Amino acid sequence: METFYKKVLVMILCGGKGERLYPLTRDRAKPSVPFAGSYRIIDFSLSNSLNSGFRKIALLTQYKSLSLERHILQGWSIFHPESNEYIISLPAQGRVSEHWYEGTADAVLQNIYTIQQENPDVILVLSGDHVYRADYRKVLKFFLDKKAEAVVMTHTWPVAESSRFGVIGIDQDHRIINFTEKPKKPFALPWSPEQALISMGVYLFSTPVLVKALIKDARNPKSSHDFGKDVLPLLIKENQVYAYIFEDYWQDIGTIDAYWQANMDFLGANPPIRLNDPAWPIRTYKPQYPSSYLSDGEIQNSIIGEGCQILGGIIHNSILSYGVTVEEGAVVEESIIFEGTVIRKGARVKKAIIDKNVIIPENFTIGLESDQDRCYFKMSPNGVRVVPKGWRLE
Image 1 (cartoon, rainbow, N blue to C red):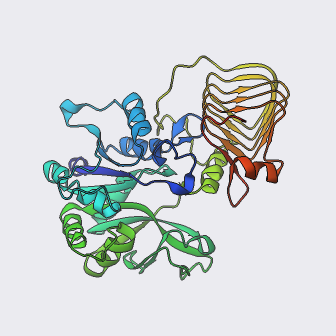
Image 2: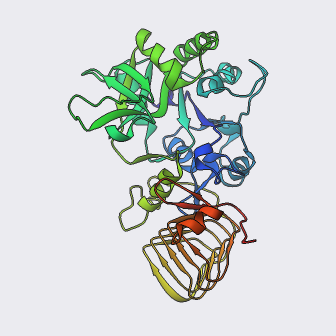
Image 3: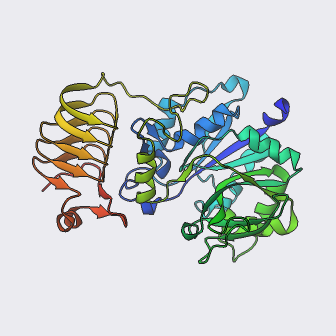
């Protein structure tokens, strides 16, 4: 087991445009969007890999990757190349074709040269926009015990909310017998009519099986070259593909509402993942800020990053990243505030996400007047206001 799992190559998909997270993705790749005050979303998949003992990691990057690559350089330069450990960024290389990545499967196929050079026994394909804590060694053990050729990590999910995922049917041995990507009418589990089994977008493949499937998919002119839509539905017809059911907290940060809720989940005394667990550290880059300063005010059930100045405001159920200033009389509730933002005197912010380096003027309100907010900001279906990076009231 020890020798085998060192032959795992981790490939993390980081190339999506993140259009549903706009404007948070206006200037950054989705995996580099800040999370829970101190982290980036990518830190969870990276920390899971590192803590699982997998130290060969390739990031398949594409859109607006500068912020992500800077974060990796500053916070993740901990691997030992002399021991054949690494974390590398792999934009489209032009070896297989001259176009950009055209789907999740195509992104892996375009790096077949790297796969051939590394010659791993198995390839672990992850998404860079998920928040969860998972020991991938358990998935590998399941893979070996089942004598599988591929394993899909899965999670139970309310049927009514499952149409944005791949929905899976399994037999009594957990072998996948049906895989439907984003069905209009998701089907429930036989033993739980309110729950569906969804794909987490995390896959473990036997390398020869994956390479053969990717080449076959690339030759199909009708394919969109996506794992969920194209590769897996065909793979389950010809190969031993199993579902590993993951029962702990997992959140796909695909929309503004999902992002806001996932952040709110980490408030309180019992967050779904202990970010300070020494047995499973979530690593990140920590910029050089002084300790936070509180002159007066009230803070309840909130995360306050380093370098913040609370100068008499009220902060309830909110997350403040590094270097945020909240002035006298300002109120911040149920909100996520990014680095370097200033909330001026008397301003009120409720159920909002405010990107970095924003200045909210004195006595200005966000989240209290829908008509005003629609004039200035994006509003999610659940009423979360999103203030773009560097916004100023003109």
